[in-house]
Length: 382
Image (cartoon, rainbow, N blue to C red; front, top):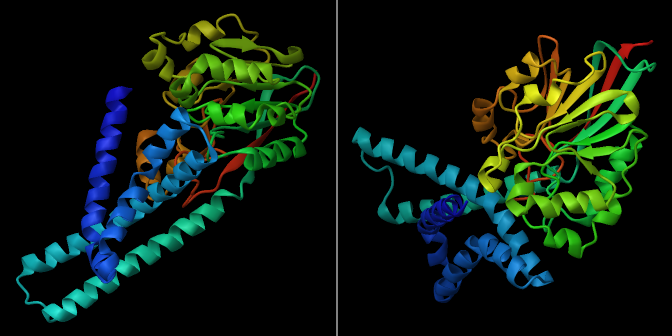
């Protein structure tokens, strides 16, 4: 983890240095305030890691504000880098052609200043639109049919969500909206597919978010699994907090709420890296379940979907991908995962990968919306 964080920090500083050099035309416009604008650039560029460090060292409203400013910059950094890279690639290709410059040196300086301002302005519009988009989650609905018994019921309504990322960025206001949206669906059961918390549990405890989590309500109960972020922030503390506030955490085991269905909860793949403990093979988890009942599996990271098919899982609910969160990063998640978002059926097994309710890093979504998921399962009546 230390190596990973070091690599991330080095890459972040490297990208910001690239942007710093590209921003030179704007710095020069500042005249006698040029030095101040250069210092301001680096304060903003490094505000996210600084803010996250201060949150742990000296938690306060000021440290949260620094982290939030930095989180917005992370999104801006992506689009600024992409646009400056495109411009420089075009410029390089034009230079290779051997064509003479189409403008004087003076005109070139003016053009470069205008272009740089234009790139920053375009980035601001994209990030602002993505920021607003992230505040308006949708309800995605899926209907599936099964030949399994639902213990006398003709229909089972599941409300599910993943990747809420409660903490500094996603706080009480968003959580209140989440609880309201979930309860409005009047589900039979609520399932949370990991990454309920961001890395640090401190802001969750400080803002007493557990009181709102306790308001989640469903006749069959509220169940959750761990995600990679629970492990990054400390899995045992996160699990205890959830259990203390009315949410049952399923860790490599199976529960059978009121004898109606099997709910398989897999520990996150991150467990091996963070605790050195291997999670149980799926075949061992399901070897003694009643296969006549409908079986739902919660597995945070949607890898190896074939294992669910081979072990008779009727429905797998996952998250983790955020579908890239910021376009065009969805192209990466599409390449990494068989399902980056939404619904897919493989043989007799159904899969849903949620884009998530919250965000990681910047509270910005470009190219997809946050969501909760309502899955209506129609079965045979006894």
